Image 1 (cartoon, protein in one colour):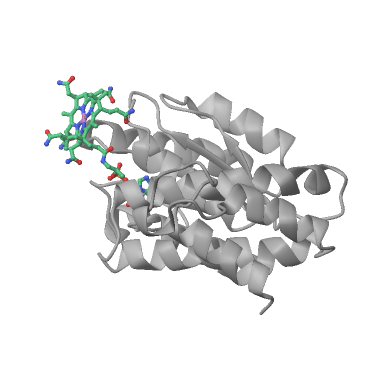
Image 2 (cartoon, rainbow, N blue to C red):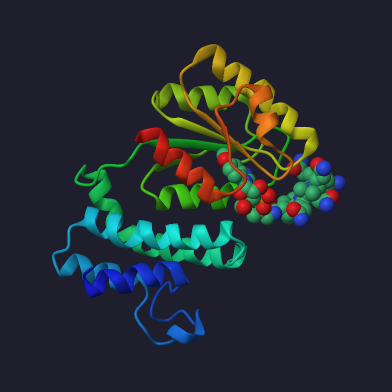
Length: 222
Ligand code: B1M
């Protein structure tokens, strides 16, 4: 791989946002994802190559480490920040249509539930893997999901819940979505959930972590 892309991929994986950022200490003073992405574009590397060969694999590696218990929430968050710093250079090419998104992912924390740290991590990882993310926020009622699906008919929907008292609201939301949009895939996640619960409420897939969510979406477009 091109040396610049290798450095960029490592910057994302390591959470090196830009030259000024002190983290990780071993990369102090080096260019971060921000500068390296700009340099890659100036070197004439196509934005979709930067995205697919450097940014997405970098996020993929940190996601895998997180799944394997070798990285933790702070490392994921800082990697996602580095990813965002690089993505801001690439985003104009998404809007111009030069780089195609893999699809639209609509995500929200279900009604009654205000926990959003896990949901935000999932959203960032999925955006980092090349999807357009529509984040509906927290305490999301069924109507808001239906409205978003109406606007993005081919989207995959993601529901997050952290409370045993709100995971039951997922069932209500899934039922409403199924009644109007029977074919859309619904991904569910959150600490109190399980595969059995996912099956019981009629959702498509349960993932315990962001990497599993990314892999599910990859399979859904394969
Ligand atoms: Co609350 N809270 N909280 N809380 N809170 C828990 C969840 C709790 C387990 C703490 C405890 O009692 N030990 C408990 C739930 C008990 C239960 O239901 N059985 C609890 C409670 C009771 C409450 C309140 C009711 C407390 C009160 O007011 N009496 C209240 C409820 C408010 C509400 O939502 N209506 C409440 C409030 C809060 C704060 C606002 C203070 C704050 C949330 C801040 C925020 O999110 N912006 C908070 C926090 C921080 C927690 C704990 C400490 C941490 C949650 C967290 O962010 N974890 C939590 C205890 C704990 O987990 N140790 C607790 C880190 C995050 C990365 O993990 O969200 O699990 P998580 O996400 C993971 C996976 O689950 C998965 O990927 C993520 C990364 O691996 N995942 C998905 C999540 N969503 C996914 C979606 C997917 C796929 C994967 O696809 C769509």
